[in-house]
Length: 590
Ligand SMILES: Cc1cc2nc3c(=O)[nH]c(=O)nc-3n(C[C@H](O)[C@H](O)[C@H](O)COP(=O)(O)OP(=O)(O)OC[C@H]3O[C@@H](n4cnc5c(N)ncnc54)[C@H](O)[C@@H]3O)c2cc1C
Image 1 (tube, protein in one colour):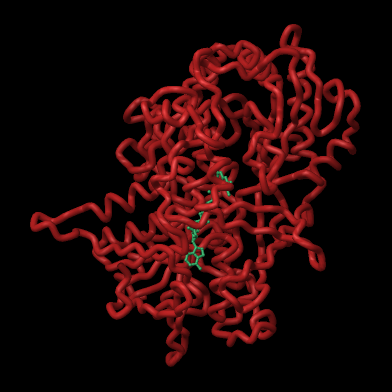
Image 2 (tube, protein in one colour; image 1 turned 180 degrees about the vertical axis):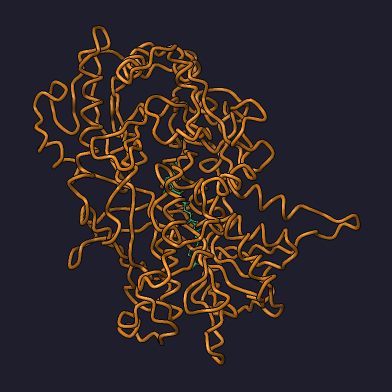
């Protein structure tokens, strides 16, 4: 347990994909580390362990949820519902588990913006190789790791599509429309995470890796933390000085401002009704996630001076970029009904799964390594380049879940009554242009208060972003309208009603996208930026500008959402952060 009287070398606030690896790596390097999280340990909760199949149930599990709403000013709580997880592992404990690397240009952008060449894609992939335990590629495949803690696996397409001839027929049609002439199963095994230098310009069907085991058990950085805690010397004493303190809300960072530059020396935290303090000799790393990190910084006096003054918070450093630049990946679905049942279970004798509701018979089977949850089911991804794509890279990614994700709203994880004829193209725009307008502000100086979240979607580049998603929907419509009997004809029910695409103008489709878009990859609210940029919160070594001994390492540090799925990029950045924090510690004692 946390010892408030014994200063640690480092304190890390938040155990998500940002905080957990950096805490583990610092501890493995011989430093004493306190990792604090407001949530508790839900690793034995079935909703967190059964990957994908129960991911939605996990997102609405009372034991994990840390929900955010962002109602427009002056309104009641009718804004967008945004599930997050307050538990050991952060949102990696409830997310959908997609494990896809960002495009190389993502890292090039940070490198060019900051002039720090260590962010080059080759070095960044090195971190991935260090933590990945790849279970789907031949051992030794270049660009992958095989001995790390993050198991990645794919569902063999033959298993995902067994007994589902309708879905197989649609997948063949997608492959044909993408110009593939090889066997569809072979094509569905092409690795989306390969280190082929041409990867980010390749279009078509790819495999869909997840951070789970081949049997559908979620893996995340908790496994790394476990191994760091478990390591023992010959005499039985712990090798690593890592302390994990849960159910503890950090309320602010403490500074010593006796020198020229304020130096982070500890944190204040709340347990029950009491406030306490704990100190750190070398530094504080804030990893509270994209909504709570800017809140913690602002409550600590790091943020826009006028906003801090409004809440009576003494200014430590005026940093107007704290809470600015909130961004996210836009997502939307095309959904239609086929003329046949598309959701027949792969095993006709399998029981009816309830996806986390009541006594779910599929969980027992999964524990024995059998049943539908042991074949998680997402068989492929498709990447396409739209007419507005930048740098000649693919920019629209989609997959075909057997249900329709309509976005996030209370109750979204419960069945929405879609019949088994349902087919959808869930899609995401991987090159969103809305980089500037969103924000996370304070509602009050109370650290328990929910911050004020304003996504400001479509403020910049709306025309191109809408066009990219519109073209994705048109591609899906083209596929579905080509489906012959008995699978076709299809009847669209989202964005429009009726024969696929027949009753929907481009404008009506774009209006639907604009209204119904959803997202869950928020980022950039305390971001790395160039020297001289007044809105840059961090330098390229994760250091909070104008302070000493204070770092931010999580989704808020990254200047854009890593696309199409952020978590692998966030783990990579956390590894990089650990490396530079260690270098700085050796170099100048920060
Ligand atoms: C529903 C959903 C599905 C997703 N699916 C995918 C997916 O399939 N693939 C993918 O790549 N990404 C996915 N993501 C996104 C991904 O999980 C997140 O981007 C990632 O977890 C963010 O990591 P983080 O470290 O920035 O923050 P978080 O994961 O949010 O972790 C922050 C941690 O800090 C703790 N904390 C916050 N404030 C305090 C405080 N004051 N004191 C102490 N502790 C505090 C919280 O309890 C939490 O544990 C999904 C996200 C959601 C919400």
